[in-house]
Length: 117
Image 1 (cartoon, helix red, strand yellow):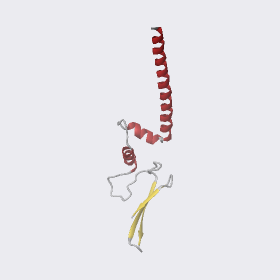
Image 2 (spheres, rainbow, N blue to C red):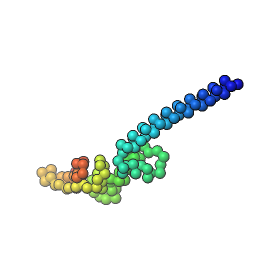
Image 3 (tube, rainbow, N blue to C red):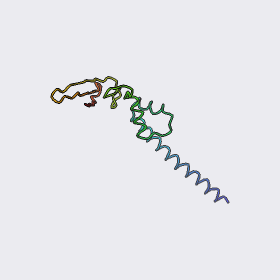
Image 4 (cartoon, rainbow, N blue to C red):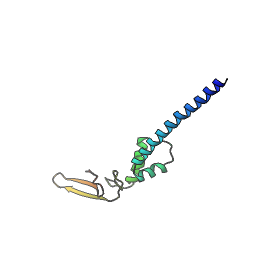
């Protein structure tokens, strides 16, 4: 009977040790992942009430902060999708030779840019 009790407690201790190691490693990985995100992105994710976010859902959250879907602007950026800065320079250029209008947007903070005609 005492051997069974000893084996029982040994099993409990081994199970606890395995759970503790797994939990500690998982916490380090989650912390490292979380620290890679900007504070703005961390806040955005933490404010969202959903338990899990797919890539598409995360992209939609980011788009909500960087794109204004209500306007008729061909490049409706309100913030840089690369760095989050709202210091954007928008331009419209006319190419008389090809009879085309080009629209450009450039982030003054990080240099990101996009264009369309």
